[in-house]
Image (cartoon, rainbow, N blue to C red; front, side, top):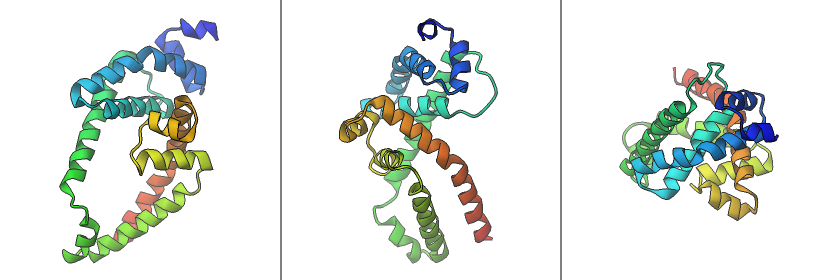
Length: 190
């Protein structure tokens, strides 16, 4: 294990590809501050910058591409920038929707869309319910209640590393199922 503390980024990435959690921790500790700083410079919000950093590292852990990363600092910079843009887009999207927007869908003649939304939401909820209890709890706290890693760890009495690991596993399990769910919903719209 000690040899991983001084391993190159490439060696650590190879170990992460083999799901070596210690290698991930080494990389995380090596680059977390840089990723956080990049995010913070753009959004000027500590909690959001921590969430962006967490999401970047979850993405690195759950990454399924076989394309090698030749320049990890460059990759992390771009991944962080893209995640910040997604976060800003998400925040502005929520700001544009009134609180009762779901109820207003029917008023605009979009009753079918409303039904499809309800069906998708019910299917996604059922899919989320298939996760193991702790993954489900972490996932809901993060994405439904908007808590960051530290808040979740404190609330559940577990380490932040465990929160990250559980989130990575939950996202990995849901990823392929969500794609199938989206395809099914698109096919029902035709």
